[in-house]
Amino acid sequence: MRYFHRTALPIDDVLAAADTYLGQRMEAVTRDARHRTFRHAAGTVTVDLRAEGGHYTLVTVATDQVGESEVDKLAKRFLGVVHAQLHHGHEVRGAY
Image (cartoon, rainbow, N blue to C red; front, side, top):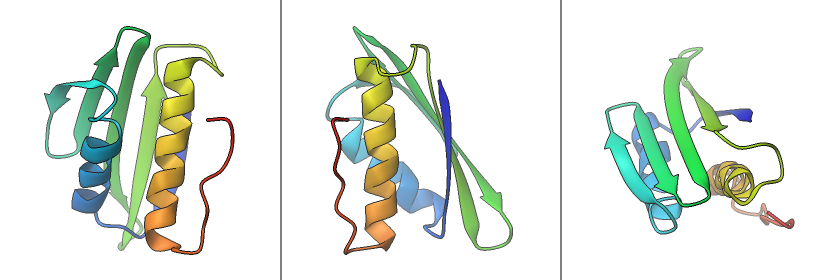
């Protein structure tokens, strides 16, 4: 599965969020300036970042599993965490 999110957070802040949220739950396999790969027994999550439109960051999160798998739920939850960093009143809810 592949998910996209556009945010006004700088790339470094999104990478820090990935390291914090996904890094606590999965093993970090690769760490580059705009890319992270995390692996778990249930699957793999990759986070790719790209500057877009001047002050936006395009976040692409992909898993090697089908939708609604445990790894897929972690990926979707991570995007909610990124969104909540800018919108402090946003409550991350859901089964994921």
